[in-house]
Length: 275
Image (cartoon, rainbow, N blue to C red):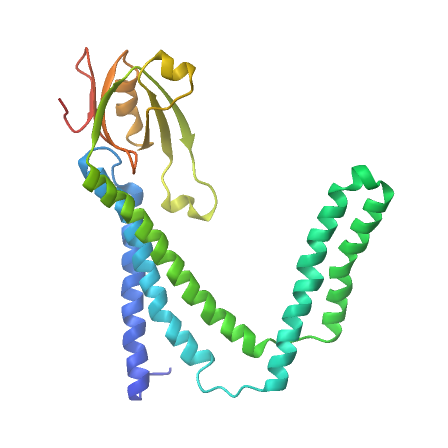
């Protein structure tokens, strides 16, 4: 089993530990945001947990990026001939994979006007990637230099995107804090279920995206006066209030966070008490 022995290795080990701390903290924050309430004043801060989680994840990637560079690129001998061949392969790959795809799609879309010629061109352009692939199998390229650079660049870009996306998400919460909540009465609403799919479904709750209308005129003009996003776990309580003839709602507009709602003519309430 290998261990850190030199001063440089110990520094890398410390950076790796810090990166793992940020990574697991980010995961914990995202899980918290998955199960936290979406109703009430506290929900505004819960909305920011997703942004905070992405920022922490980006920081962890920033910790790992220099380590990947040191492991794969630092002080490695660069063979100019091999590098030139790899760059040539990347350029040829672009012209033999990407460009023919768009040309084939263009030929297919123009087949109505060009007839058989469009179909022939589509087949011809579509055959280019297969021909180039056969050539590449006979003369493969390892991409030793550019592959390592691509991995380092991917880690760095992914870190920047995560931090930027998280900061944008948090900025909406800050805008709501600065602008304050709004409170109005609404007579009509409609709701759509937003059920995440794919790999991110485990960390993204099912939500009801709600459109609120002040009166029948807004409904007739398809003018949405307010929008809310309510987790499925909180929806039954909220729906009881919105189903009443007239509901008074307090919400934060940027994050679409429901603070509280009450039936104007009855006892039904949801979220924080409002007046």
